[in-house]
Amino acid sequence: MKFSYYIAKRYLFSPGSSNAINIITGIAAAGVVIGAMSLFIVLCGFAGLKDFSLQFSSYFDPDLKVFPSSGKTFVFTDAQKEKLTGLENVVSFSEIIEERVFLKFKDKQKTGTIKGVDTNYKNVIQTDSIVFGGEWLTGNDAQVVAGFGISRELGMGVEQVYTNFLNIYVPKPGKGIPKDPSKAFRKKSAVNIGMYSVNEDLDKKYVFSTIGLARELLALPNDEVTNVELKLTPDSDPESVKNDILKIFDDQVIVKNRIQLNDTLYKMLNTENLAAYLVITLIAIIALFNVAGAIIMMIIDKRKNIKTLHSVGASLQNIRKIFLFQGSLMTVLGALLGLLLGFIVITCQQQFGLLMITPTLPYPTKITLVSFLLVFFTITIIGIIASLLASGRINRKLVNF
Image (cartoon, rainbow, N blue to C red; front, top):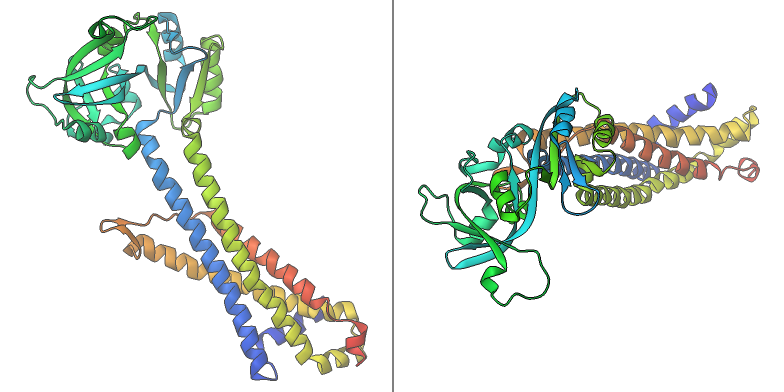
């Protein structure tokens, strides 16, 4: 083993007998370095993009959200509130009422979703982080806070005085088509006192109101809600709290964490990450099989040396190990150098914004230990397989030519 490793190091770091061999070896080594660097940069780029895409969910989505197991609403009793308050890892919770509504402001109209929240909502969600104009709800049932997209489509700004009202309509329950369309809807009017911005989809969807306005609009009893949103302590176990909540509600509800609330987004980002990894890995495989070509050329170049080594007692297995170690060393050193160069590129991107999405927003990146390990082992394993295939070309016929 030591004999094969020693000879492999000599072959790797000493020039070959011809310039062609040296050029081929250099190209193979460069391919390993570039493959490792490219794969590392892509993984860091997607890790940063994933964090950037999901950071908005931390502003808007709670740690846990309770849904009815059937229907649109469920009963939330005072006894259940006391038990929920008594849970050790629950910081706060907010009662929520959501429903699709029809919005009309002056001569413009659109559909949206009203989200009635209680005064605890600002303890669950950082409302200061999403409001960019006006102010948050003050508890007045005649107030709403609309998304930027809704405000833009309706031509509605932040109203300072109670003159221009946003009219909110919801269909009354019943069968058939009413003879008088004006009696088919419940209506509430409110003033938009603020605007929030989270992302394009949410900005076009929600209008926040007090829970009192939403209850009155939907004619719901005081003990019925559509959701309960919870904020947990930073060191809590969401699954453990989830089980406690299910016991409080006798398993009559569904509890989702933040990942489950954004299940589609997580799947999309993970799929994109996997696809990019596989594509770059395929390119790396093509580049790393240059290592196999370089080893085969080195075997041809060192035929006389191989015969001499065999003549002095080196077995075919030891001779194969020489070239296996040579290719493996080239791969490992190339992977480490590629990771170093990739780390430098990503660090420069984070510090200086080499690639910009907008004039003020650099492309997000994130360096993780998983990226280092994944790149190193991917490149190393492929390189060792290529070296093993190439070293297998050494046979008794070659040493007895």
